[in-house]
Image (cartoon, rainbow, N blue to C red; front, top):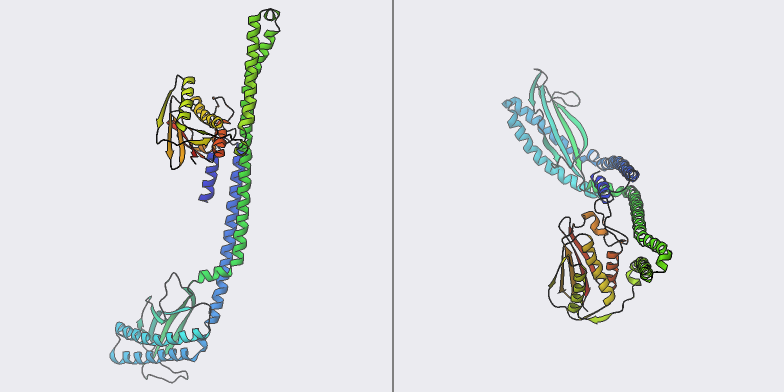
Length: 475
């Protein structure tokens, strides 16, 4: 139950924007899985109880030799003879219950040694696939004087071992119960002890223990267990697959809607400007004024370039790393990066940009254009999302050129950090997208780094910083 609830909360946390219908669907499905698991548990428990009873019946059948073999009857006769002798001594010397019980236990200890030897021999003859331990306890011993109608001896609830071995209470299984009765008369009524008439009653309980009995029973249930667990796993796998597909489709639908809204917004600005410029150019006064005409044509040209740039961004930045054609050249990393940072600093004079040089990186082959695009995308993101201090670190790290770009912006929420490199994904600032873009910049960065056999990682603490690290092999 806690596992299902944890999974439900995790899903809800990750996809907090889902509508109530999806919450209800997930919750209902989880409740159905819990109910199915409960039914399976009940059926398995019931099947285990049936198998356990059948196993105990089998054990009882194997233990019938205790009643049929003469050696065990002889041991019981020895007990009866000892009891008669002990009672006779008690009448002659007086009743001292503790002394009598002490002597009785010593006799039972020696008697039990003979029992265990005989029991082991008989058990080995049967060549069973499992071992059966046996315990027979005296749970009560009572001696009555039928002449004086008096209780001569009573052990109450005191128990002690008669035959077998002491078994752990948690591991033994109840086998049988019974009672032995003896008296001062023989079977034909002859008085064995003249002037002394008594009756003894001994209450008994028998237990058995089969080492690893649970394992034996579960092995006999292997088919039922496999079918039950297998069917439950299939249902869980299908549920998880369906849930993942549902969440993926929901995520894609949200990204698609967000992308359409963003591209519509991005296209509306140049289109509206073109519309105004077209109306302006149709004005006869403008047509006869070379300065105004040239200004209007420049506006049309700029907005056309902007529209082309947007289309190119969607087409080019949507390419996967396998579709990116690299034109590698040997470069001097430090010089390459310095020129790029200098150009970027000129573009954003209001920002503080610092460069930290670590271990010198040797010359390496990269595609300068694509690598410039990747680094500019990361730097532009740092500016767009509110970073005022931007730090760039370059160093040689175990055969890799490592570049870390960090900023002091608002950071990225934990639940969004794994998705920032997905296509069309844009980090939400609250419930609003107040930063322009199509969600392709970091996706394209990842594709460029992958095309160079490198790796990309992100570290961010909401409200403090964001750091993106790019690594490519030197060789």
